[in-house]
Image 1 (cartoon, rainbow, N blue to C red):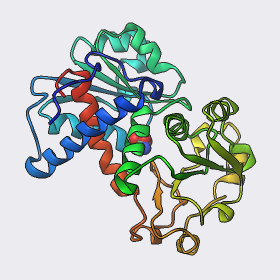
Image 2: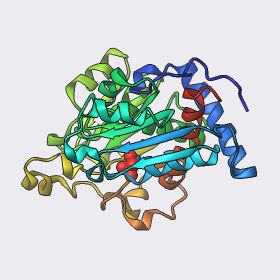
Image 3: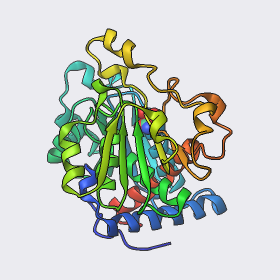
Image 4: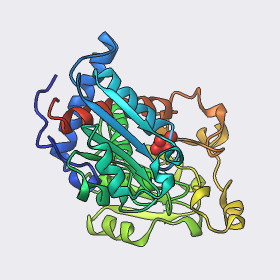
Length: 313
Ligand code: CP
């Protein structure tokens, strides 16, 4: 197993902008080692004596549970505050004070929060690493790492691929983070969304500045035959102030066996999950459906990140 935190010891993980290709390769190498370790032994004692605080102001299944499992599999312990309503947050305690409280008990804090920039705010007050587990419609950097790791694992490369992002590109923070990471690679990007859910212009501008070929469309049928990666997302109901607009777009795309019949044999379908109808259950047994493998990769990536920021990779 590689024994270097590659400069991550004590660092916050707030944005994908902190990762260049060399740092990505290092984290992926450690994640590989974590997978081998889990498959052979199940657990290790690398983080024995360390404590993770999982602080979630928004619902989560995968991110919360995989960080929890990652810490436990490395021999550490976890404080979970998944329902902040039952914490002193409900009495009006601020985010900075909540973070300063948890750092008295934990060595690293994983934070999900509905406001863009909340993780950066927490990091200004914290003396232990903060890992951004999603800040509103901003970023979800650990998801983007596991997404990129999955593309690499499934297809053996990232350079040269055509990646289609489908669905809610406006509010989908996983799309924002993954798109930013992909600007470091030689990929072609296709953004497939209804007009009201297009990728924010500032992220389109970043893709443009990186010199990548890209296009925007609302027609999934025209692009499905060329895509190497179909990255499907849920329409984020919780971000809509007008639910009538949500009803207009919620079932705009459904990936089903009929659509899959038009896709390449070696393409993969990814989804950060949860899904709410945009991928039919009938697709799950298709070998190209990578979303459950993607979900498992999340634990290995988060094991690698925890080990790195705690100086134990
Ligand atoms: N992909 C993801 O962030 O899932 P959860 O909301 O369940 O954590």
